[in-house]
Image (cartoon, rainbow, N blue to C red; front, side, top):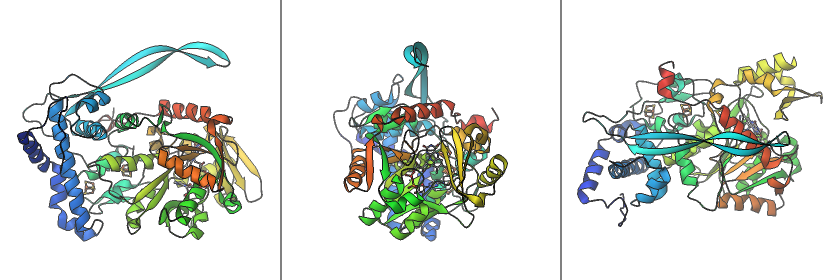
Length: 502
Ligand SMILES: Cc1cc2nc3c(=O)[nH]c(=O)nc-3n(C[C@H](O)[C@H](O)[C@H](O)COP(=O)(O)OP(=O)(O)OC[C@H]3O[C@@H](n4cnc5c(N)ncnc54)[C@H](O)[C@@H]3O)c2cc1C
Ligand code: SF4
Ligand code: SF4
Ligand code: SF4
């Protein structure tokens, strides 16, 4: 049940208000659709009866909480998320913040964006120059609604796919309670017969409505974290390299990801790791659940084609604790699934999110074309692909290494990656990439105190050699710079405008 604290600045909640909110919550389309489809949901065996009621209960609680937050916002001037969280002390601040963003998706709240310009001093080619920069301020206000207002119906995610912005992460397919969504690396289909229009897939999809302002405000509540507009919230940054010679043979950069995964499995901190290996078609990624350390090394190295890894998460339900390795859009999907619709993570066994840096990924067919057209090579001749120093580099079985400028291969990348603002997996527990580090090393960003302790335990165990990322060249400076470039180049997503062809 929703619990109410006293003495809040926006007034307390009366029993009548609570009853009204609970009634409105129980009439919410998402809650109703979920409840009414109970038999169909249980038939799929995706969620047990106990889990079904836990999710339902959490959905009603979250919806009740949102309706109370909305009530408290009525008639007020536009406010920053942090101000709203300060004033509505009925619920934890992070709940209030996530609620305001969801209320916006439901059509009750509007966002006011104010843009200001200011001059800052920047070093350009060694010379200090005054440069104009824009600052954005986001405030939120309850809308004045007509009497006949009906809250926005959250559509199934086919609208995300049809708009060309789906990143094929596979999360919706894992979440859908009636298994109506089929996702692969290039396609998404919804079985209209079984879809019960609960909108759950839309509420957790990383490409439906934005959570950037909510998560920024929530992360800033944690005073132990550092904040960067370009790489998000972080505890510390490092450059690391594995000391395990077997991992060196299969790694992409510093072998940090495989070393962390091995440590988690060997120390029974997790029962399984979800990662990516080559499928029967070499360089075509295949998501896998690894529960035996001896199979882990097959996952080492980067496959630049995209892999809808989140779709297999429900197959890992039998494990109590799981680590998930993936690219930034998948980390965002997991974060959104933890915030919405109810703040109850659907798969509570995901204990560690290991996020990779990612500038773009490619359709598998385009990886084949790229190899043929840019290097005149067959994909089977390749032992490694890499991006570094502004080049796309391939290594061949013959021992030869060839590269082309990165700009020559960007035309092969997936269109939907142009809507991605995150380079460094802002929503991971630990992020790992090559930018910023020397060859054979990985840049590592720990994003919580617990994640930092885990990384340093691995270093202390002698499994990773590690230094501060601020002390090496090009180091954190370059990660932040390229992170900023990706954010600035990112195309905005406005599903309604895209659908209308604007
Ligand atoms: C599509 C893609 C694009 C990338 N782009 C950049 C970039 O622009 N800049 C940058 O600094 N770093 C980028 N990276 C990250 C980088 O290539 C390395 O993965 C990272 O530095 C970790 O190296 P490592 O030696 O520690 O990993 P390893 O120990 O070699 O482990 C690699 C891990 O990556 C996972 N993996 C491999 N392919 C995929 C895939 N397609 N999807 C999900 N997981 C996968 C494997 O399961 C494995 O767990 C990218 C990664 C991917 C997958
Ligand atoms: S959840 Fe992922 S796969 Fe599903 S529609 Fe959204 S972006 Fe696409
Ligand atoms: S496809 Fe989406 S809207 Fe339809 S049942 Fe599945 S989760 Fe619900
Ligand atoms: S660029 Fe973004 S959308 Fe594309 S694969 Fe990487 S994280 Fe996903």
